[in-house]
Image (cartoon, rainbow, N blue to C red):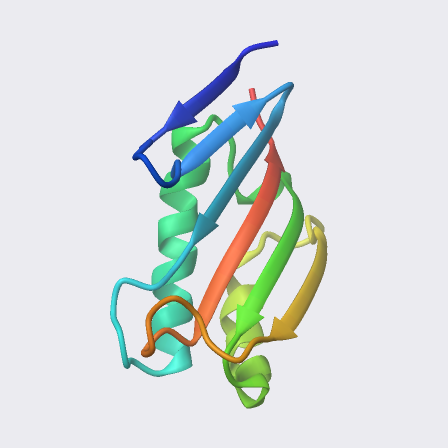
Length: 116
């Protein structure tokens, strides 16, 4: 099975697929916005990345959500719950981290998904 990479730089690829599994990570496009805006940005970005790799949100297998403030958990979950199709919840964990790569980021999401 071949490994396919999309949006590849020297440091990372936006999407990697192998053996029917897609791997991707997304961050917000707006620094210093509130958690609702940043979560919406991340989820919209994930839609694009999933499509690029031949998948969609109904095929997510595992999600890891990183929050810089665990107090944002409920508001982030509100956006996540609206975005995720009913009956397709993946395995998931959500952890609080001291910081993300940019000081203003409040959320980062890593996904694996089934793909074509």
